[in-house]
Amino acid sequence: MQTTPATHEDSHPADICSARPPHHPRPDGQDHYTISEVVACTGLTAHTLRWYERIGLMPHVDRSHTGQRRYTNRDLDWLDLVTKLRLTGMPVADMVRYAELVREGAGSYRERQELLEQTRRDVLGRIAELRDTLAVLDRKIDFYATEGNTR
Amino acid sequence: MQTTPATHEDSHPADICSARPPHHPRPDGQDHYTISEVVACTGLTAHTLRWYERIGLMPHVDRSHTGQRRYTNRDLDWLDLVTKLRLTGMPVADMVRYAELVREGAGSYRERQELLEQTRRDVLGRIAELRDTLAVLDRKIDFYATEGNTR
DNA sequence: TATGGCCTTGGAGTGCACTCCAAGCAAGCC
DNA sequence: GGCTTGCTTGGAGTGCACTCCAAGGCCATA
Image (cartoon, rainbow over all chains, first blue to last red; front, side, top):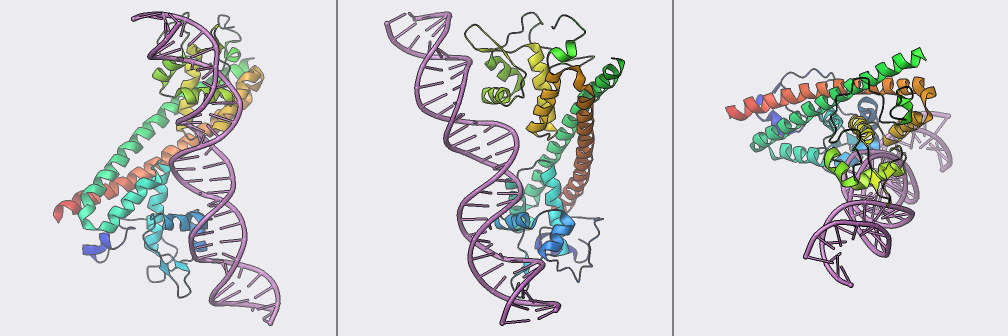
């Protein structure tokens, strides 16, 4: 959506952003990160990155002439999304499903939207649960702060 | 132990609430729930309840004359707390640690407070992450809603 | 008395998400 | 050439939080 609008969304999964703030280590021409560079800037392990690829959660990573992985800015965007989804508690299998939909192209827009909307509802629910828990924690902390000091 | 207020906090883990809203199925005199009743009202499985007890996460459950478990309202409160903490992502080992502190009595107030305050910070962090994710989801959903309808 | 339902136990099994291992290749440096 | 560093692979292993199993006890109803 930022330079060539039409097929951009479908050409690669790390897509989909209208206004995208994330700043990458390198400009779009020189984005050929080794696996250890990606480890450094995502916090994921190399094991995990290779495993994501094996299970179909990564959308085919470029290789150097010697067969080593070379990640692009797009890949970083995708990993960023995956990391966020993982934090919501979304199972890896569901993320793989989403990755498959992205690979299928524009025809899966509707289904992708539904999947994300379901996820959105899950996230809202989780936030509500956490707020609930926070209230309980605050009550108990308050108890300990008060009782703990008066005896 | 449960009628005399002073040691109330220490006599049993399912304690700690100053104002406690949760309404129990039965009044405090008749609270002798079987395991299947607890399953019905907590949503946990019988397996899990027994497992919690084995690993020291439950504070000793009463038994009937035939050796069957009889849970009290206090136990339900404790399970409610455990369930909430679990939803925050707190490891079971940490919850067991908290249970041990409760068993130790009033001397562990300070440490309990610190543990809960750390948990509180974790929860706040998690909520912030989820908000972040929500923003990303909203952007993507908006993209699919717009692009999906214009083609 | 027999049948069914609910409960008990220790130990073994499951599913998820990694996490590690061994063996080997390629590049850079002394 | 030799050494180190970084990468490759498939398959096996790990840790967590359950989850299930087999074998059996207790008790109410038919």
